[in-house]
Amino acid sequence: MWTSVKYLPENLPETIEMTREYYGDSWISDSDFLKWQYEANPAGPAMIRLARDVETDQLAGQYVVIPMRFKAFNELIEGTLSLNTLTRQIYGGQGIFTGLAKAVYQDCAEQGSLFCYGFPNPNSYPGFIRKLGFTDLGSVPLLLRPLNTNALVRKRLGSLLATLSLPFHFYYKVKDRSDERYEVYPLTPSNLSEMNAFWAKVQDKYPIMGIRDADYLRWRYFDIPLRDYQVYGVRQKNSTQLLGYIVGRCTEVASMSSGMIVDFLVDSEHPAAGNCLVNTLLRFFVDKNMDLAGSLMMPHTEESRILKGNGFFTCPKSFEPQPFPVIYRRLGPLKGNYKEGEKDDDPFLRLNQWFLTMGDYDVI
Image (tube, rainbow, N blue to C red; front, side, top):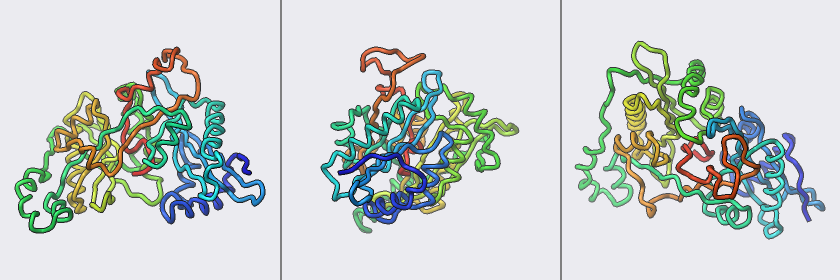
């Protein structure tokens, strides 16, 4: 028998113990990382329900969402991102996943959250769809660009065949594509205030966008423990106006040294500035000996077109390390500029209305 209780900050040590038992030692079981994720978010603290064994007082599971601010259809709204869900193995089959989730959704609705979304892994995906009423909106394409084809072929097929990849190595070599009209420079906590004016200009570029102001970028990319990001801005020379930004991280994906473009957004009036950002980050990845560059980017976006113009291509489904589905569940009634009616009238159900990148979830 278990009971649902609301999470309190003093519960963190025992949730970490439970998480380590489930995931092992990783960022998801690190105290500093979880304090950052659960407590420091500028959109507000995490909403968490814990399952507690009424006889032993041991934690049996958890369901976690964090608030995420959105600009959607000209209104400021709050959504929630589902993450870090788990049930202790010995408590499987007791309805903990669904019971906690429904309690959290009720808490979220009472606090004004309009929806919950997530990027589930293949293990948790069936539970969200079959048990919790989520809708699969479709998948975000994974875009790839070789940086060192010789190394990629050697790691996958051996040194003999690597020599045959030399023509592709020259084709995918990252060249300097600087533009004398623009200046790319590091964004740091000391100059992040420029983001607010940029965000005010681009916030309606796509119908549904997670808010990307200075507070969000500071929390997501600079205050985060255990991860290092490279963040660049771009402006016209002799100007201080930010025209776009890009965020990258060096990591390992499927045993390959990979430079991931975590976030990327550019002013529509200056697409050439976007080329400068991408080229600068790719050259950074090459300097760090990355073999491959990758990004999640919606195909209808200008940013996707810029990436493809810089040598990125859509990864075939058979080669993806895992699929990247976006799931969605509405938590409260649509108001304001949203059309209320049947479920199919919900504009959030159309994935081509969203702007989503790796920055909109927690894994990279």
